[in-house]
Amino acid sequence: MNFTVLDAIDILIVAFVIFKLINAIRHTRAITLIKGLAVVVIAGVVAQAFGLKTVNWLLDQATTTVFVALPIVFYPELRRALEHLGQGTLFTKAVATDRADADHVIAVVIEVAFRLSARKVGALIVIERDTGLQEYVDTGVELNAVLSVQLLANIFEPNSPLHDGAVIIRKKRIEAASCLLPLTETRLDAQLGTRHRAAVGLTEHSDALVVVVSEETGAVSLAVGGQLRRYLTESRLREQLQAYLHKHEHVMGSRGIWG
Image (cartoon, rainbow, N blue to C red; front, side, top):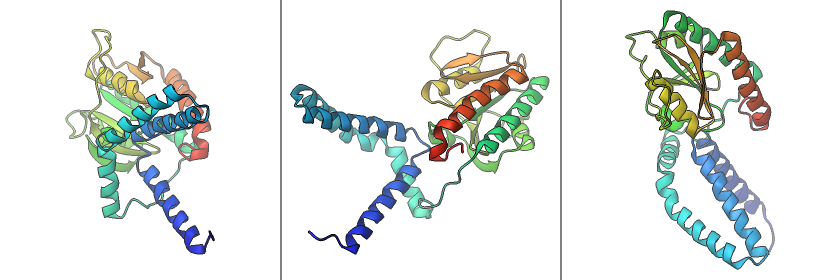
């Protein structure tokens, strides 16, 4: 069969659409599920190649179940992709960030956290990393604003419209404010309130970094990996954020997330 120019165009169009669809769900947990599905498919191919009949049967059943469940599991992402398509934003180019942007995020978050700490003003600041947080962004008020000390500090001012809930930072922008986060089921210190439970809860479901300022004590904490690191000094928080974000930048650099 002859390979024509039309065949090449056909392949390029399909590849382009798939690439854009992946970008559309890149900021959601759906991408993690897709990676898991890819592992199952690859394992099935290997099992079939080596004649592992029982393993192959189990993987076939699992794959069938997964494909039946996909429309339900991916409903929010599918709806969002269709909305983007209708708005003409599905094929817009994403803006990458670099190390300087990561350092800017760190500097702003630290300055605001300790400004608020000195006044015992509570805050919940989320820094998105690889795991997408769009489902939590959707629970708040979308801002999509350039991150600055003035804006971030003003959001958490007592009695301001957006001070309740979390701020979610994506790259170097404040994506949304007043967002709702999942609460951890893990038993925490009785002195810790909803902000700390929400911070730990989110990091149990994602690789996000969450900075918490207690309105009772003014203590600054960092939640990561389902663990809470409390009573951090300014220098210690900077070290922690740099360790995670710069490492993340190095690992993800080829994909344009932090560099």
